[in-house]
Every structure is written in C-alpha cells, then in structure tokens.
Image (cartoon, rainbow, N blue to C red; front, side, top):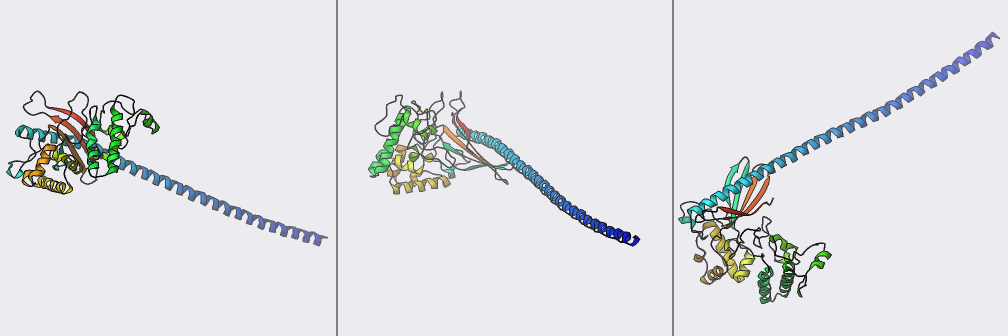
Length: 361
C-alpha cells in the first residue's frame, strides 16, 4: 500500500511539473507578444514625433521665407516711390533749365545729360541692395476714349481694314464701334450693328453695365465686347492703346499722340504708312533712341511730313514715370508708375498735378 501511494504521488508530481513547464512557456510567449506590441507603439510614436518636428521646421522656414519676401516687397515699394520722386525732380530740373521741349535732341551737342519723355531707360544706381531704373513717357499717347463719343475714334480701324479688303477686321471694328457707342450713350436703344445693352450684359454676368455715360477710366473699354481685338497692353501691363482718362476736376490730356510713345501698329494706322515706310520709321526711331538727332535727317521728306501731320514731336507737359526696382541678390521686384502734369516755370503759381498713381507689380 505504501508503494502504491508513493507511485501515485510521483505521478502527480510529474504532472504538476509538466503543467508548470507549460505555464512558464505561456507566460514567456505572452511577454514576447507584449514586447513586440510595445516596440511597434514606440516606433510609431518616434515616427510621429519626427514628422511633427519636421513639419514645425518646414513651417518655420516657410514662414521665414514669406516674412522675408514681404519685407523685401515693402522695402522695394519704398525704393520705388523714392525713385519716382527722384525721377520727377530730375525731370523738373530739366524743364526749368531747358524751355525747348522738343524731343528731337542731338545728344552729341548737349553739355549735360538730358532727362526727357523719350522712353529711354535710365538708372538711379543701387541702394540698400536694390537696383533702381526708370523711364519717362509722354502721357499724351494712345486713343482718347473720354467724352460722349469715343466710338468715333475707331472709325479709322474699319476704314483701314476696308482699304485692305480685310472684311473680317472691318466687320469686327464696326461691331465694336456699335457696342462702345451703346456703352456710353444715355439711352437704352440698341444699335443696329454691334449693339450691346443692359440685357446683353446681364446675360453675360456683367450687370449692371453699361455705364450709359462717359467712361471714368480707360480700362472700362475692356468690358465692351470686341475690345480685346483693338487693344494693346504694354510690357508693364498698362492698356497703352488708350489715353489715360483724367480724374474728375482735372484737365483732360489733349493734343496729338506723341510720336515717341506710339506703338508701331498705331504709327502705321494713324500715319497712313505702308509696311516699307513703317520699317524705315522704326529703324530711324531705334537709331534716335541710341544716338539722338533729328529724324528728318534719316527719313525721306514725304514720310517725315506724314509723321508731323499725325503726331507730336514735343513734350505735352503730361508725363508717365515708370520706376522698376529689382533686388540685386534675391530677385525681389516692384514696378511703380505715376502720371502727372508738370507746369513750366512760367506758371509759377502751380507746380504739378497727379493723374495716376499705382503699383503695377
């Protein structure tokens, strides 16, 4: 009996040992599983923190760049305004010193550099890391679309196209003339050719056009259907096909378009120049820009006669100053323009009147 009890005890001890061994393996397996999950969580947290740090750095760097761009643009704007004042002062001094404002200047005979509305690129040098240059143009240029009948100024486009048997351009010009007339006239009657009134503008999402009165600024013409075909925008983004419309209370800019500020297409149209004649005129003007002198010395009398009948070769007293400021190292750029009337020294009670003032870039 004792032997049987001892054998049973040994068997029980053996089973308990197996259970303990199996239980130990289960604990170790569970521990290993928990360690793997914890490692994944730690790695995920590390990756997340890394992404957050990188995002913060990127945002900080981007904010720094944007802040620098903003500072540079503000600094360039101040330089542009200062450059405009300097250009105005230089021009005023030239007007004070030289009563003859003919632009046909022989620069070889001049004792000092002239500052005139000739469109030449002039430099004011560098200041605080910015390069400053400017051009001066005569503001009496382009078609005058002010007043109650601006459409009459475009009749020449239709006539010229008809003379070339260009039916498409002729019809487009007539349609634009009709739409422009409807834009400024005070009635709601629609014109037979190209008519475009309130209902038409409403249908194209341009209500409450038309103005039904004289345009207050030249860019309004771009709202008139068909205008784009007869409009030129210069390198500065100015609608230079049309003359600046004077603000209320200021005298209008009148007179012939200045020859040196007129675009080639308009030279040909208004001067009634053939393609060969236009080539000669443009070459003479390029030569004049580089060396000065009188155009009459390099053009046949017939061509110079056409030009003098259609264009002015003298300053009108109205000037557009364009100042271009560029960063020497970082490329920041601002372009500023203003148009003003400068009175001569004989009109001592007045100095100047501003007509336009804005940043183009």
